[in-house]
Image (cartoon, rainbow, N blue to C red; front, side, top):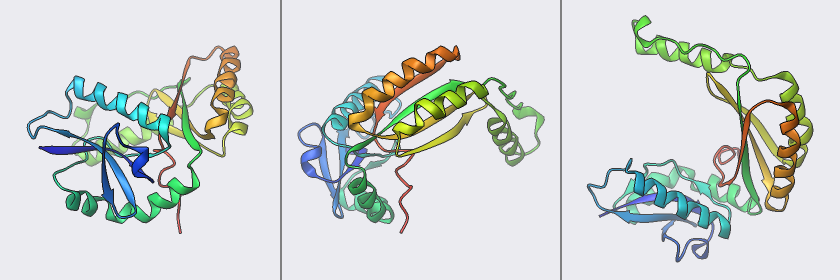
Length: 212
């Protein structure tokens, strides 16, 4: 058997009995056991983990661990997370009451995805793909409205180019302001620009913002 990690948490009680709590330094990883031959891309497994993530977030804010992080012992889990533990602890302590909310909006001027076959090297293709992603822009009126309606509700925010067809606004907000963010999202619909407001989510975009 092996375990697949879900998130990093401050307290054991933030995890149990929803998942296994694995000590790593002063923190705990939430995890579930799976068979050694269990495909990580299995749909039922993905749905199961998504459900556990949501229930864990209801209990307390945690840092999402990149999907696919597996380990077979607590020592291996400790070794794989050692470089992050001090930063994670500071981030979790500072953001106990915060969650992430995201707004994904279609690009007004999407950039064409480069044709992989038009490049002689993978590096050249990746550079062209990055340029296409960064070249996507959203409707200026939508951006102005989002900055006016949503950003004041967040302690931090970031515009992220996810791909060549969309841009995402990630916001770090207090749990008690989640409904305010949703209300602002309803106002944002007046722009007529298609978007998806989702969350709350565990810390991911802002998980590495803390620096000593």
